Amino acid sequence: MEQYQNVKLLIVDDNPAFTQLLDIILKEIGIQQTLVAPDYEEGCKAFDEFQPELCLLDIDLGKGRRSGIHLAEYIRKKNDNIPIIYLTSNYSEEYYHMTRHTRPSSFLNKELSKFKIEQAIDIALMLRYESTGNILLKEKTPYISQQQFFFKIGYSYKAISIKDILYFHADNKLTYAKVGDREYPTNIQLKTLEDEFIATFVRIHKTYLVNIEQISLVSPRESTVTIGTETLPIGYAYRNVLFSRLNLIR
Image: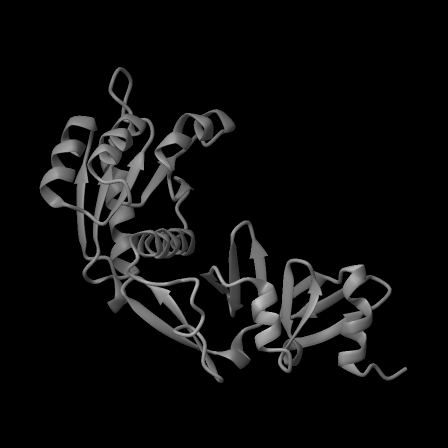
């Protein structure tokens, strides 16, 4: 993908077989500029010399060695905004609390998924640009036209036709647009989207705003709607408005 061509990414992991596989996946999604380091010392040196825009760090860099958390602490002293994504085969609540102070963008399990890697990188870069002021995610104008959304991916904006968006889903501080099998993140609130696209979308739940034209099945008894292959819940507070918008024939 062209939007990733200029992204420099540092991988620090002590398993050569794993880093080779990871590098293949990264190149498949368009990241061509990668550098691999096997431990804390080499990772520090690589960070200083390579000047990456994103870091993927293994937490466990070998028995008796300084960990990826130590490396993240070093990186944070050098750069407070660079996204850090942790890699681990043993993700746990303990690890989460151990790493929280380094403000990671996300965690990835070492059972690699191309989609999860790409999504984690998308979100990490988007949040970095927000924090450095390179883009204004709170301003909806650059992102929305009458017919399309423009989602920030890497250095580019990807145009998505509004009619192709199945639904919006709020999760934590972000809202995700579901398009086919992919989700595109934005920090525009569901209420803002609901007010903007009242003719096209309808709120069915506190966390779901769905495209009316994409609804294939409504089950009032089960309080669900079906969109594509997914079944979504209907919140009690939204039932009457939804049913009135759909003109149900009894």
